[in-house]
Image 1 (cartoon, rainbow over the protein chains, first blue to last red):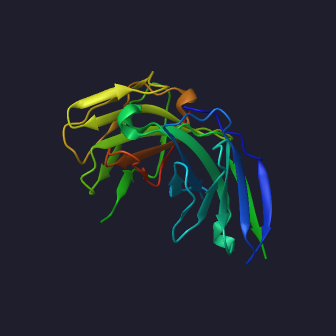
Image 2: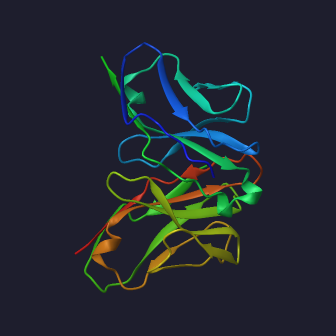
Length: 114
Length: 113
């Protein structure tokens, strides 16, 4: 699985959009970009994933560059409850992946401030 | 659905003791995994299972055993606890299909003295 690089920490004002970047310059054509987050002391929570097109769901939007070497997770209206560590993970599809293994890096610690 | 449940939430062991961390899911998921998370680090895969009766090792399997006799349950056994196994343990499950996502339990916080 390709390696990802994320800033260690970011701040965001409550109600504003939080834009979390991720670099994955060695991504392969069959690798997806996944985002999970971990609120303090809880289990990781799935947010969104994509292959090459931009994706949106009720939690966030995922913007993937055309060359797929980087992506941005957007939380459109951050709240205090969005304070968490956000992990960008690149991996192949489940059927080629040992048990759905997720390789978690250090992630970005997002602090949403009032 | 209760999702993925783990018991106990907290546990303190003495070196050399054995115990079993329980994990259960009610979503009929084929894939189940155990991760450990140490301070300041990401999660590391211990063992995983792609279905009942099938298990395999992850990145850090030493000192742990697993079995999968039913689809719902995937217990993790510590054979002889060591201080290096002090960690937070997360169980996860998924359907096992392409582009699948994983659901994590709330974690078990284990301290080995």
